Image (cartoon, rainbow, N blue to C red; front, side, top):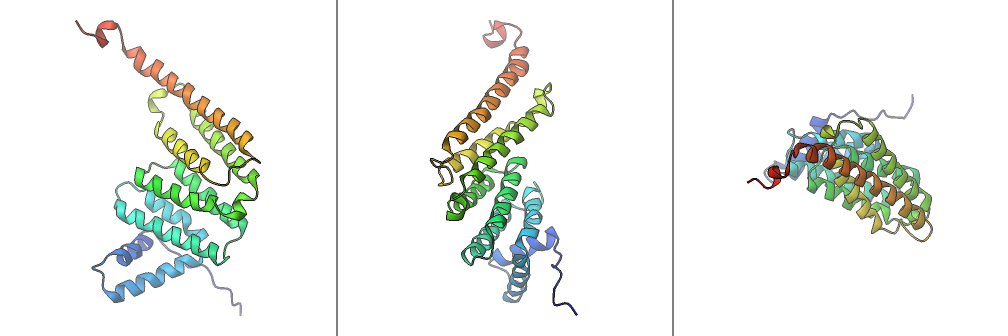
Length: 227
């Protein structure tokens, strides 16, 4: 008989219910103990369950902002705890980073959620084993540029449907990365050029939106300065 146990299956509803019980001061001690036990089971396979939490956080009206922030606190404690105990390999840490960044730049999130994700990522990008290979961070900036290019080119002739929130998320992410040790004298020149490419795409798209959606609606000077 094999000693290998299959990863336990969790639903979004169960995971967030456990978080709600754990962080709610009015919960009974027995409920808290049961909820914490289930969260410990989740923690054993945190890489497999990351997307489950992301899906719940991305739901606009399903859960409160405070509960979503509780989910991020849980993920932060779980991931950082595993790193301190050397429970995650360098490859797994980069998997976590890529999951978080993909979620950050592709989801509609509140400013609080964005700021908390950036804070978590900032801690990861200052880790020694992340800093030691500057190529990883360079590849990440390439991924950011490719993502933005894909978004812009997916429907180049319809500026009215373009989601300007993408710019805000990408810029806040890059600002966070600039303050970490992962950008250094070994990769800063290449990252500077990659950043310029992103800035050019943002500038051109903004100009197109202004020209096609705003300027085209102004029929004459009287629209701006009515008589």
